[in-house]
Amino acid sequence: MVIRQQNDLGFESNVHLHGGYVTAGHDGHPMDVIAAGKSFEYHYPNHQDAASLWYHDHAHGRTSRTLYYGLVAMYVLEDDLERELDLPTGDYDVPIVIADHAFNKDGSFRYVENVDLGFRGDTLVVNGAISPRMRVERRKYRLRFLNASNARSYTLRLGSGHVMTQIAGDGGLLERPVRRRSIPLHPAERIDLVIDFRDYRPGTELVLQNTDGSGGTVAIMRFDVVRGGGEDARVPRRLKPLDPLPKPVTSRTWDLALGTAAWEINGKSFDPDRIDATPKRGTSERWTFVNHSDRVHPMHLHGFLFRIMERSSGPVALADKLGWKDTVGVLPNETVSVLAWFAPYSGKYVFHCHALEHADKAMMLQMEIV
Ligand code: C2O
Ligand code: CU
Ligand code: CU
Image (cartoon, rainbow, N blue to C red; front, side, top):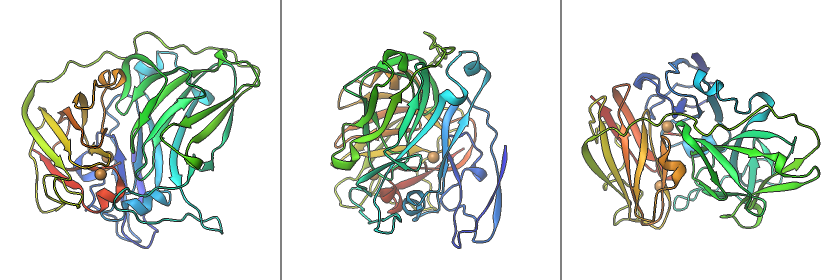
């Protein structure tokens, strides 16, 4: 797909396809911007498994603002393997983009910079509406959740703790569905759930809650179950064969926020003229993120996917073991190891914390795949 982006913002911006396998020149590297009034044609090969990707501005130092003010959308990739599975489609396959906001009296967004925590709003906005209601028929729905918040993490719970079936994560379908009652969703992560509303009588109102929230950030949205809904979808027991784990050729450790108040990685902040790692194309490496702070740092690699191997806080969630990821929430004082697979493309890409105020303050390094 070729998308021509015309920049009419009056300042530099660009577009990054988050989770996409995209050549370096089209990735939306933070220094690779479209000048005001100019345009650029992004080439997206779409040579990857079906997945819920998304895209957003990535001009360096400004991303926390531009995302907050709305330069965010989902990019849903489908493929034949997925189509053969009879998962819910069409009206029953619904993207749900969650962000927290604050408002001025005139209804405009209010942005207050908070470099420590990242922006925290007092109101949840779902696909542009405040805590909306969705009428659902008594059948299965596929709901594709994206946490497009600047820095807020959520834990999703349906009603009083009903079962939700996770079928996909950042990198697309899991090896098999996983039933969960409580699901963490850190900034930039995606989770596809199938919820079977046949389990509820017509008239049932189910609130999707954020158990990490308080006040206006608890209720995310409400599902109102109505009559009707012939079922033609199913969730097979196997979704997608899990690729064998590649053998790492080397290991690297990234110290997050070590010993200073600044948001740095290995004591460094982003320098576009410096290369911080040079993985070889087609190889895999074990990367360990060590969080020395009491903030969550959702670490994200551009251009490549990884598998979560180990967490110091406890076992890796089953759903995270059964699929590929591009972002992982590294919890306060936690150590997380991932196995990253540096294919298919070579070139310069960044990796960074996706708490956007941290990324804008340069909690981002650069790798060159050689
Ligand atoms: Cu959502 Cu640098 O990415
Ligand atoms: Cu990205
Ligand atoms: Cu961070």
